Each structure stands twice: as structure tokens, then as C-alpha cells.
Image 1 (cartoon, rainbow, N blue to C red):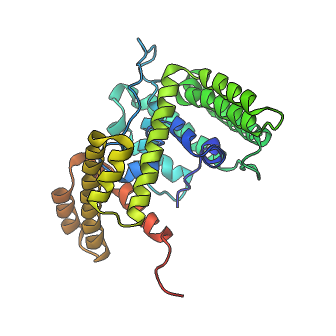
Image 2 (image 1 turned 90 degrees about the vertical axis):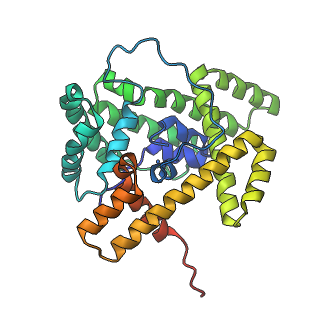
Length: 313
């Protein structure tokens, strides 16, 4: 089974910094990101202000969303018995994700990206995720792994934004753990650190915080079986009626998506023949949804396996 080799600081920061940093990995990493991968609908609201795009991109291949494209391709590739098997799967998917003139370059980069993920899996998280020094050591180890696999321009396109968030996140943790600071000094230091982020990064952070709040609230509503009326009332109180209406629409889309997944999964479980499965796939899913269907089914099965048993003890 393919290992989902974790991005080390992402895992550490989710625990140590309350989870908001996870959005620094980009929208496709956002697999906050597991939920997005299984859903065909738009991201939860409210969202961050739109980021200002760069005036020009010197290299049309090394774009800011390159890592998102790679991670989406890896998710679509699904499980593999070995890194070499995964590379073969990934290479076969290149034409669907990259233009013909990018194909050769993409295949070369993807091969190294798989190797990078393997190497990353060998790194160990520190025993204390709240120890700033240990986290810095982990970040440095991850940086060395990245530099071993990518050229400087590739590194910048893939991970440049991460580096800025790493510095911000670690500085914030160090400030919060510094017992020598008075409350006023700590607040001033945190504000100075916040200003170290660029406008786009602050918008991304705000958007991530907002989406995590929405996701947390939605999970709580689901857990207690809240009605649509209760959902709307609570969301309106927190985000306003327009956002609550959009979130209600997302609820409906998600239920529809999950219902169609359940139909297809049931037919699979019944050992239907390939022709019947293909016919149902064509009936239930759009071409875009069919591209992510296998990954969504895998995530659905993993979630079901991880769910606590309801059998009485």
C-alpha cells in the first residue's frame, strides 16, 4: 500500500500551533485536505480575500500552484505497492495534468518528487511537538531533504511559501513559550511577528483560520445530528445569513456527493461486472468527478475503517 508520506512540519504544526498553519501547504495539500479530496464541491466559506497574483511569471512551468498540481496527481494515482510502481502510475497520468510541452519536464520532476516523499517519510517528528528547538531541527532536516531532490528554482516554486510560514510559525511558538516575557511584551512580539508576513500570506492565514472554524463547527453540528434549521441559525449568528446560505448549499452538495459515492460503492461491494460499474459511473458522476472518484472511494473506505465501532461492549 502506498505510504502517504507526511509533510513533517505540517504534521507538527497542526498539533503544536492549533492547526491553522496547515493551509500554508496550499489548496491541494488542504487533503484539510482529506475532506476536499473527497468532495466535489467548492471550499467552505467564509474565504480569505483574493490574493494578488504576480505581475509576471518567468517560468510558465514553475508556477505557484505547481505543488498543488503534483499533489492532485499523486492523489489520483492512488495506492501503489512501491515507489517505483507509484512512479509508473504518476507518469501515465501526466498527459491529463500537464500540457504536451510540459510533459517531459513534469515526468522528471515527478520522479524526484516521489523520491522526496520517500525520504521525507524517514524523518522522525520530535518527541515534544511543542519544543521550538526540536521543531527547528525538524524543519532544517526537511529543508536538507528538499535541497537534495530539487534545483533552487524548483525548490522556490514548490516550497518557498512554506519557508516563510515555517519562520513565522516557529517564531510564534518561541514567543508563546518564552516565560521571560511579560504579557505586554509577548503581545507586542506576536504583533511584530504577524507583520513579518506579507499581505498575501496574511490573507491565506486568515482564510485558513476561517475555514478551520467552519470545519470545526460543521463537525460539531454533524456529531449531534443538528437539523438544517439549527445549522442555519448557528452559522448566521457567527458568519451572517449570506454565508450561512452558502454553507447550507455546500451541505446539500456534500450529501448528494456522498449519496452517489455510497451507491457506487454498494455496487462495487456486490461484485458487479465491469460493464455495470462503468454504466453507473457514467450515470452518477461528471467527467471531473470521475477523475477523483477512486481517490474519494479510498478516503471514504479509510474514514469508515477509522470510525469507532458502534458495537456495545
